[in-house]
Image: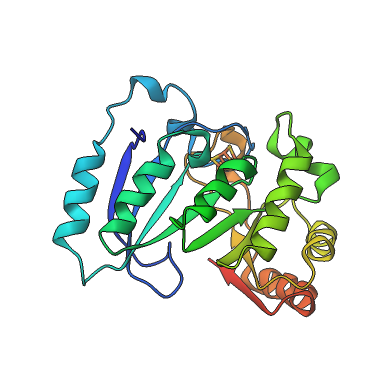
Length: 231
Ligand code: SF4
């Protein structure tokens, strides 16, 4: 069974072009300093889980009104149960989107082969050589690269996205990332949300302004078919 700790019954921002529900799966193999999911990264085994059946019942009831489910986290691909859960959601007629940090390419590939995914949003945390510094953890960079390749030639809809945090990700980092991903379909520059951060000092950080974000977009948009900002 897939551990689920949050069911968001309606989301307007987690599936491009669709009204969706979202489930949040706990646990992560990164420790990004700016993470706003502190509560689901640590001690999640003690949390009360939401049964898959309750999620599926909700989806059954709102079918036609919602058309997608986003599976986010944490890092959902750490869990074996994700494939079966996604196939159950698909069998209800829903489109399934996965939010991932891309560190489990074998599982992503398997889900693509089994046709249980319709959209993948993969976080690109930093230029590859800065990953360990930004995610604050050991990283299998080859796995991240493999996931990037999978998405780019996998035949399903996808986006790459980077959360921009002042002092951690700056214009030159975005330019490096854009060179790495050049020619990809969609790239999203994501505003940082200073809420329940893993490290409290990031809760008080001054965010990039709208005009700075627009400047980032102008810098990297020539590398992509579609480049957006998510506030
Ligand atoms: S922000 Fe980093 S630590 Fe937090 S859930 Fe995402 S990948 Fe994991």
